[in-house]
Length: 207
Image (spheres, rainbow, N blue to C red):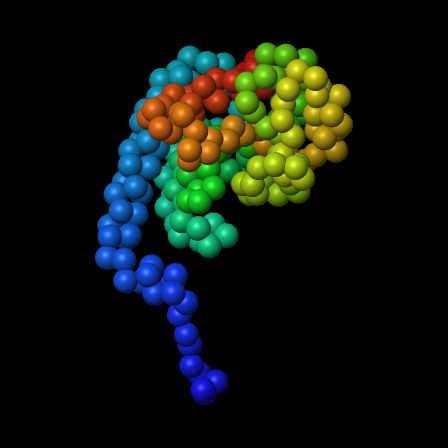
């Protein structure tokens, strides 16, 4: 056997001989885009006339659709709307599909308005708690895993824990996670779920 020999396992050979897999993947990714398109339309309706607390240069018309193959080696798609990235300033709601993991609906805030968002979060805590939201514990806003060490559930009995996490952070992210086997997915209610997640976060980001 030479040093250049490469062998495929039985499972790998089954996969590379599967003519249908990438056709199925393409169909799934089109359906994900349809979900994101529907969510974009729904969110546009939801924010109309809402007094959002936004950075001065925020533009509600901005949005972004992104599709890729390598979020930790897994395909993904996402929508950013509302969308604001300017230097260290962030005010963005990201709706992300991550193959093999979950859907995530997440509000990311950072910058000059951060103190006001933190104050809103704490003074309106019980309007936000108990809505299946999770506070990110990661030092990066671009971590999308869920669970111990990654996220803290925002429940009514965790206000002091949430306050302690918020105290020293230069940004924060509130997320709702939906597993691929969740009834919301099975019943075709992902758009509804994303809109509900955004509405649950509104007490934090409105006047």
